[in-house]
Length: 293
Image (tube, rainbow, N blue to C red; front, side, top):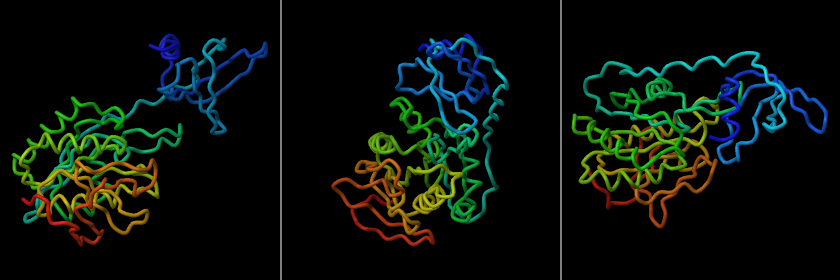
């Protein structure tokens, strides 16, 4: 445990607490008031990060702190509940959305400026009602993590959950996933789920779902359309351009994230995407060598 975690544990400080910190720098006492931020993962852990009232963050060396006082404790986060969103409609295909977290299932905490994996698949589905006109949606929460925390052992759990859904009669599965490691997860499941006869679609977003510039809604709509297509592979569905024109369907073993923030960050490497999908439901297949149902 790093020095900052030990300090916070000793003082009973939690992320989001509003605190007053007194530090002594060059013989001068300096007072800071603000919200405690998560410690930076790649730092040595020698500083306490506080978001000041003016919006700026300040890092205070633990060794220079002479006094700390908790003014207001952070409010506890709501428990994640999970259930079927709406009753099934006769005649529509059945699609399961598996939530794993990531930006597509996150929102900004405007108080601290941090992004949290906070939306469940249920909340995400409710935020994009158009998908209920395409399929009967069953949401399932598997993880609620950012994609940098994804591990190979989680791939096994994802594969088992996907297989369980498909074997129970679902027509397709969508996996909401963080974008940083989505290409790795898509490749892993491409090899783990053998002889697929139904689509398994990974989807993410470059900008959190509660931002006006978010790409989450269109990506989810396009992925739902692909999940009911005559298609039987693992694929990634993301924006094809920076504007909301169409999404591209990338083969799970050929896709890579090529930019940190662009909405069209995902590209098929040394290959052609499988298809284009428009918001209105049009699908243009760009190649013929794909597995069908």
